[in-house]
Length: 233
Image (tube, rainbow, N blue to C red; front, top):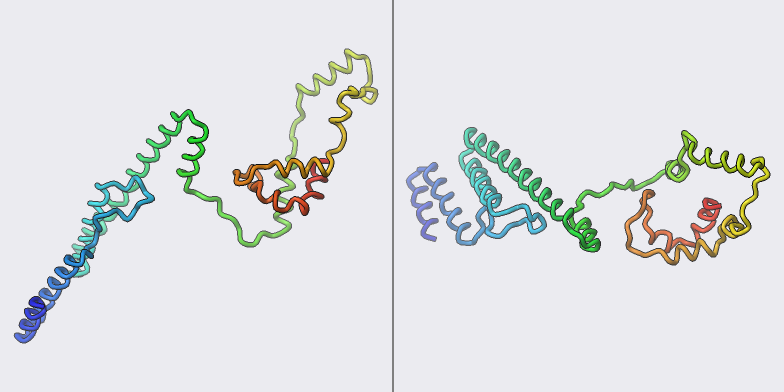
């Protein structure tokens, strides 16, 4: 209240500039008492472990320069703020890069597979963007090319093996018969086998190359069964 009385007293003397300065000082004092100064004592980045106390001090200084520019509206103060802001951004990138490098080194030294994948889930921040509306034709063409890749060249090693087998056994290609022990393996895959395989999928696991998680197959097994059977046979 005393500060406001000083402002009114200066206004009575028709000294507007001095009254504005007095008012700014009064507001700053109130803000300090209410603990509302720019740059809180506790970090606002609990999910950024690389944001340390040094960056917190730089952030507070950056905010002070911004507040100073807002008070003075001076071009030189604006340049000081922008230069310091650029420095702050570069320091943040440097700290983040150093932190990620150190975590990667720790990750490579970890011999526990379970902890390894737990850390992987924590450190991965990027997510694959997904389209809201997927054209059915694009969906079909994508999985058709994904699951049926074009074979540009034949397997020469396998071809040599077949030719050697035909020559050693003195038979033509159409005369070669599979071993009776493999008849069971050569039969078509049944519906029950596909459903059994889907039921044994573990939920909550990462998807494969097609980006379709196991939970999708488990919840839509009956709908997917005809397509999967056609695919596997």
